Length: 249
Image (tube, rainbow, N blue to C red; front, side, top):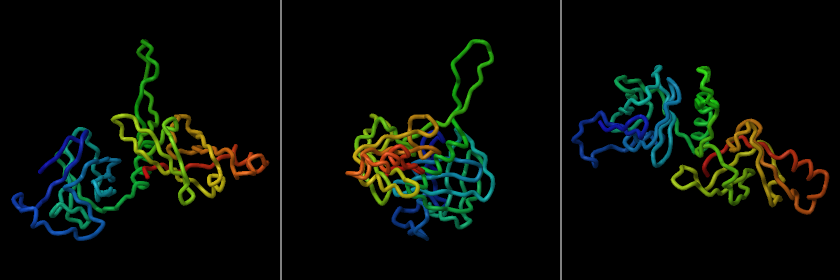
């Protein structure tokens, strides 16, 4: 079996004999199966949900039983021929415990981003307030934005509309996981986006990043072309359009 630290990558193993030649490996039983041998990233969201990502896509793994998170422990997927399909003959090994896999669901970029955002809200990052040496300072927990499901408006360099949503291009930081292009999914109709020439953002939770949190909006100016000075345009510009999801495009 091959595995990496939980803090790094996750790779999976095959329950078949280790000396089987690669050419003898059968094809995946179903198109939605995950190649456990190619896993590059894992997120243990809770006792029953783990997200796994491979170079060709991502999957949500639902466990048939509660399997507590074990930070720092090795994490391995065990399945016949390395294909995880939710057949009932597969396990996720967390440390020294084998947990049965109950289901496998493919995730697109949107599904992956929303799952991570939901987990970040449920399990906010602990931080210390301003340190005062009185023995009473306690860590606080806050939602920390991630480039996997958030955009830093300060790094937006261009934008266009696509199927009613807005796609922005960004300038990534060197060495970061930021993507060059993000899709900002809007709720309801936002016709002014088709005619505007400038945009700005409002963070609903005051963190500066846009993640699709409640209150996140895009404010468009010069709306409706030649009607920019009209009362309708002014109302639309002040109101903006609500952003409900952000994910790499």
